[in-house]
Structure formats: structure tokens, C-alpha cells
Image (cartoon, rainbow, N blue to C red; front, side, top):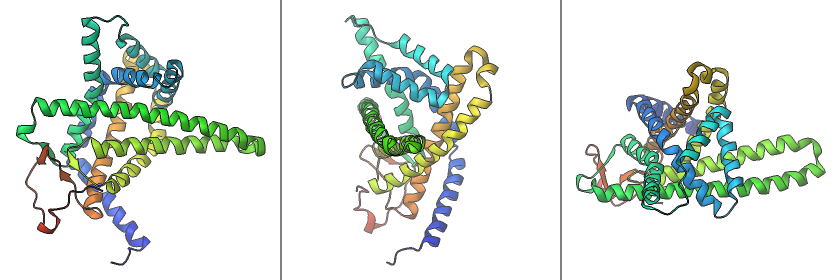
Length: 315
């Protein structure tokens, strides 16, 4: 098979984007985004507590908290960051070992994994999958929570890698500045963009590959993750400008910070779910297939050609 020329590939990519937009609306994905916003309000504090706790093993707590709050501040502003910090402080466990503390720890894990459980259900819906009736009980629930917790741990690891890369880039920028003083700002800005893009792409790739009850090739996952990260990076500036210019915090008074968090998560969820739709359509055009794993079935029966039935979609 001869390789597709660039104009032809661009035409197909345009069709993929167009079909993705149509499916995005048909699947009523914005409702799924609104639901995720609600779940996130209850999950964000315990999730960040666990991430900070895990990272504290390798780096100082103050350093980790400073980095986390700095990233959050760049996304949702100072007022919303203070609200999140207050939520974390109120949810932090006591150092005393008691049944109340143990129960609090269990609820902390449940709360931290709730948002990923919701993402899993939503991507399953977008990819037309559902849990098998016999697999949808307590065992499947425990497996989903364990999988979600592993993603929380993965986020902590990604944060550590991001901090290490930022430190490395800072050293390189200092050396570059000694030779070319005028390029400091450009070098730092470009380095931060590259690191942020790599971190976000990695996170989206892990979510698309690990979280849904599906078998899909890494090759197809990576394409979807890159597309989603690109849209996220582009829209990050737009939503940041909107939140900064709309004065939502003033309009809603004391609830303004919560509203800003909801709006940011709603936007982020819409981008994530559009990426899931894009990945599904991309696979239809370029990839192999998305297959249910051993815990899932199609929402409606899908005929699979015999010659493709032996493929598992792994790669």
C-alpha cells in the first residue's frame, strides 16, 4: 500500500475532526462534562492530599505544595486557589492513629478516586462499552477503585518527573543565559510549554489506555492524547482569559471561587471527552479497533469481521 500524500492525509484529518464534532454533540458529552465538574468538587481535595503525601516521600512537603498551588493558581486564579487550599487543610487527616483516622483515610481514598471512576464510566459510554452484568458487582467496583487509585499515584509520579524536568531546564537556562543573555525569557517560556505539553500528553495517554474497559493500541492512544493535549493547551489561554475578564468571582460573591473551579473542570472535561471521541473516530479511520476487555461488552452488538476477530488491539 502506497503511503498517503500530505494533502490526502490532511483531508482525512479534517473529516476525522468533523465527525468527532458531530459525535461529540450526538453523544451529549457536555452533560458528561457537567457531571464530572460536580464529582470533582468532592474529589479535588482528597486527590491533592494523596498526591502531596506521596511526593513528600521524595521531596519536601513545602516544595511540593508550592509547586502544586503555583500550577493551580496559573489555571484558576488566586481566589480559587485559596479555596482549594482551604479545602485541603480542612480535609487533612490527623496524625493521631484511631478508628476515626482510619475511617477518614478510607474515605479519603474513596473521594480521591471518585473523579476517575466517573471519567471511566463516561469514556466507556463514549466508546459504546458497558460492564458485563456479572462483572458489575462489588468485585468490579473494587477493581475500578484500585485502578483509579493507581492513576492518582501516577499523577504524583508525573508531578515528580515534571519538577525534575523543570529543575533541569532551569539549570540549562542559566547556562544559556551566560552565553546569550537576551534569550532568557524565550528559552524559559518555550521550555515550560514543552514540559507542560509532555506532562499533559502523558496524563491523557494513561487515561485513554488504562481507565476505560477497552483494549486499544498504544499507537492510537498516543495520537488521541497528542490531539487532546494540543486542544487543551490552546484552550487553556482562552479559558484563562475568560475567567480573568468575566469577573465571575465578584458576580457570585462568596461562591465565586467554587464557580470558577466548576467552570475550569467543565471546560477541561469537555476537552478530555472530545479527545475520547476523536480517538474513537481516529481508530475507525486509521487504527485497528477498540475492543471490550474481559470486564465489558458493547452497548449494542457490533459485528466484527472474522479476519479481525483474533486481533486484541494491543500494541
